[in-house]
Image 1 (cartoon, one colour):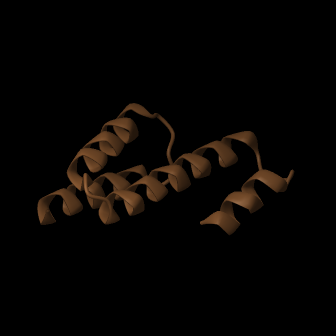
Image 2 (tube, helix red, strand yellow):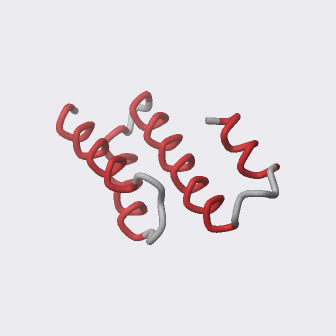
Length: 75
């Protein structure tokens, strides 16, 4: 994920929109990974889910929301 973030921020051939939706995806995924390993897993997952629902443009938004729901059901 870190390598992808560097590619997105350092390459000029990507549009601003492409960068934005993919940076939002990376940020959400990073928070979800940290949430799963943290002690306040449910709170963090609910918070990221709310943030994702509020954002208009996130790459693979539906997939991230489904995964958040799945992780909440498992806990």
